[in-house]
Length: 276
Length: 316
Image (cartoon, helix red, strand yellow):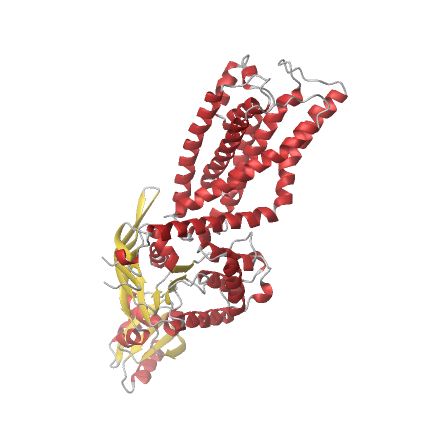
């Protein structure tokens, strides 16, 4: 068969894929650099104002939250707001451009035509956006740490745990973004954000530890489908171990399972949209 | 079986959408030779884009086989993508990147080092007379210019086969001519060009060989000249009437020298063989019937070929 003579030797093929993958990363870097200011504003405004109002202004004017955990509300907020920055950015970084590129403009076509398996185009997008989401989480940290007018107690005893949670949080968020981006069309994207992204951030144990939900048992169980719950609890374990938090096995296991599920949905959706 | 060019064997594509099945390709066979400009001519919905889709790895064939330069598109899509360039019907320029970045990033996807890729982008910008708009974003370009960028991008990685799906659809005549010149230029460099079109002038003036496709089947394949000769008519006379007139069609068909007469809306298209006196006789019949508004005479075109094969206009 003639095709044998044309096939690439494995090293040449690996190098072809690697170069194409790296090319896609460079493309995303150019775009991210160009939009850096806009992206950081989008990332920072919400947590900045949240911390400013609830952890700076409220204590100053004597309007305090009872956290019931022996720690300040500001301390509770640190992991929660970092986590919600990660998930919001992970979803946005993939879903928003993808919906346009699939639906209105079809500009994804040139990247799909790059010489590597189509699934790797999707993987690149998820990996790049996961990193972007982690950067967003890191950008938010100084704001939520420094602005509050009450003491914030953050102790990082276990760096590998923190890094592990960060990486998984980024990956889960961008996989969720791709799962959304491959099913939504441009007209629905506002609705999808209202129906998925807003409930996820509000009910993601951002403003209270999961254990404190105990009095509302049905809600405590219902929110377990929300990936942000495990991200917040994971960051809580890593950053503020003094606050009640889930066992690492629980959030790591759940995040891994969610990542596998969302990745499967994302890849399936992507290939469906790209190949007829 | 050849190792170069495009070989399409018994290609079938069935789309199933919402429970119903549409057979877009009903088993087509084609062989595009290395280095030629090959045209797939047919009306909208004939299966042209599906054919290109399968060849460019974007549509999965239901059955049949396609090889590009000997590589099976289904078995090794990445290796196929490396050797082909694609311009689809859509404007797929990366809107987040400038024109220069569009070209350079594409070259990097195909393995060029950044330095080489930027040099390649500058070279293409000069070749395609785009240098002064290098920093512009795709949304700021006219249709003709955007299409030029898409062609430049498609050849940035020096493909040996270039697919152009309706490359001049929606372009103004001047941009169309400019694009034709570019396609000729690529042909001169030895690139195999596979283009689809529903403009018969495009297929006629540009292509070495043309296949006519309709309802997912190849009807004929030959050089444009041979196809035009195949209708065995010297002249195409189009009679424009005030209203359709079927009895007149019948009478025209009976005239000596008339190869065929086809009604088409308010008009009748008459093909005549080379015989003296055919035109006066046709005119006399038409005048006797009344209602003749206008008459045109042309040489047979690929459109004539299509009509004689299908009884329909390409544009219908």
